[in-house]
Every structure is written in structure tokens, then in C-alpha cells.
Image (tube, rainbow, N blue to C red; front, side, top):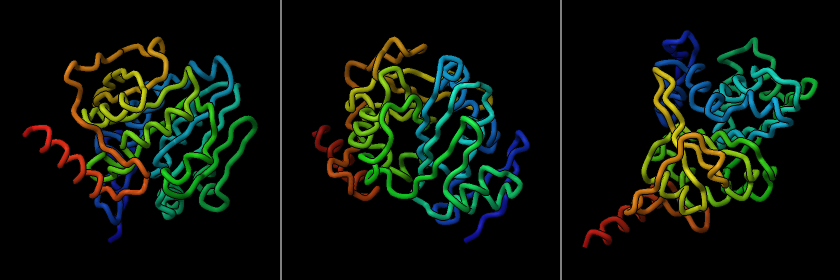
Length: 254
């Protein structure tokens, strides 16, 4: 199955994933969604005013999070590591925007650099790469497909690995507001906050190590958000992870 370019409401293009059938971005606006869900809540401009910034972008997709980040002004160095398990995404993104030198370079060489800014493409399963990823990351853009499709990317155990990579004053930002996802983040040690709505886009979740970083903290309900997705050996399939949680929920109701 192939996918033709889809024009979103802000004039930017997206695609439908050829195997999963999922849109890479919201129909309300692909470019504006990257801004609303990741760049603005991550306060990238303010971080660049303070010094060098290192970003881990999980779920390269069509590269919009990376391109939006590179457009943020600032003289401080900006280093981005962007990861995707689908080895075809780099060529897919470059074909959608053939005049973009960043995407062309990533598709051809896996890297791009200009002055104090650089991007490195990482290809593979995030779960197998945690020990090799850069430490002290200032921002994590967590942007896999939604939890019911890409469940292995939303487990307590994966978030625990990301917690270890994050700088003490850093932040993980994601579009998801799922209670199951938030439960996994809390179990992994994170403090949580809301990321504000940027109409027409709804808000998401920010996860941090230090609660004073949060502008809009979320109190954890006394009863919690239910059991998280679990993948203790970081090797279960999405279906297995969902089935185990469903059994855990059934057992809790007995």
C-alpha cells in the first residue's frame, strides 16, 4: 500500500503510514502540531538562550519535529539525535520534501551539520538502543504512533530507561494524555504536568525529574491511573503487552 501526500489545514503535508494506515500528523496541521506538541511546551527557545541543548527525538516519522527545532533561533549549539525503527522513513521524508537539505542529507548519509547545529539519524528498536543513547538529554520528544498501535514504545520499563537518559532539569514531552501512559511514567519515577492546548491542537503530557520544572503540574489521583503497560525484558510484542495489561485489569476487578 502506498500513500499520497495529504494536505493538512495549515498548508503543510503529511502521509499515511503504508503498513499501519496511521496518519503521521493531525489533519488540523502537520507543522503546527509539531510546534504545539513539542517545540513550544519543551520551551526550546528559552533553553537555547541559556546554553547548549541536546534533543532525543523518538519517532522521526517525516522529520517535522527535527525541522521545527532547527528553525528555533539561538546561538547556542543544538544537537539532535532522531530515532525510528522503520528504515524507510528517511527516504519517505526526503521524497515528500525533496528540496529540504536536512532531509536529503539524513536519507543519504544519516547525518546533517551546519555550524553549531547537527542531526544524527539512529535506526532501530529504541528498546535495544537505550544503553547506547546520549546521556544528559535536555529534551526528549516522545512521538511514536499512538499507544494502542505502538504499545512497546509506551511501557513503564521503557520510560524508566528514558528517565535515566534525561538531564535533571530536562523534560520529556509527548502528545499523549493517556491514563495508562501517565501511569507508566509515574511508575518510572517521573513527575507529570500538562502541556497547554494550542488550538486547534489539544495538549499533552510533560514528564520531568524535578517537579519545580513543571509549569502545569498534574496531581496523581489517589487511586492512580490503573496499571501501566509493562515490558520488563524490553522484548515483548505490542499485542503481548496489551494482553498482559488486560489480564491484570481483569484480575484487579475480581
